[in-house]
Image (cartoon, rainbow, N blue to C red; front, side):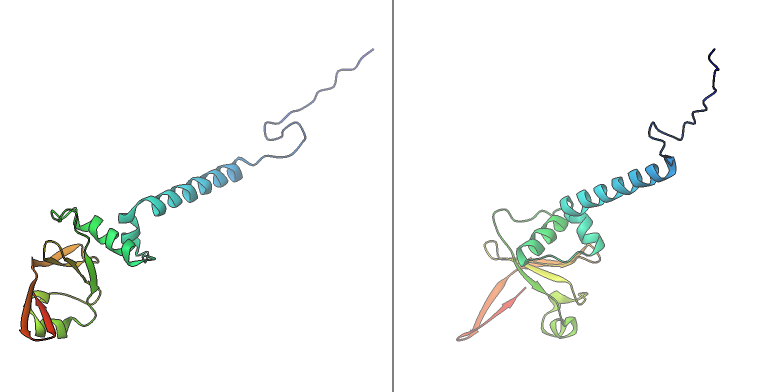
Amino acid sequence: MYKEQEVEVTPSQNKKGYKINKKIISALLFIAILVGGGYVLTQKSARFRSIIGVKPKTEQEAVSRYLAQLSHLMVLPVDDTPVLATVEDPEALIKQQAFFEGSQKGDVVLIFPKTSRAVLFSPKRNLILNAGPVIQNKDAPGDQKISQ
């Protein structure tokens, strides 16, 4: 009456007959995890951004990034927003003030006005090069020089 037919079902086919390649699915899943993890790291971690050299969009973002790095190296003044300056010509600065000894182009000076403190910091080397008080010299009228 009825003839039995043998139907071979392979595990690599779904109900509609499409072949599913496990390697492709695994690769897509792996890529999605990498992209998602990278996004979280770059958005949430200031330290990670500083390591890979992502440039800050604003000066305030740069100050925040440097403060985050410095807070691991020293105790920072509380309730004192620093003014940021970048070392462009270290040789000229060293000739003017010994405070800049050991600085390189790209190092930063964070000046804390309320506490009259200055910190010379090298973000590339993650190193505090110097720190000290800010003293205003009023030798010449109208010309104020800041020394450390």
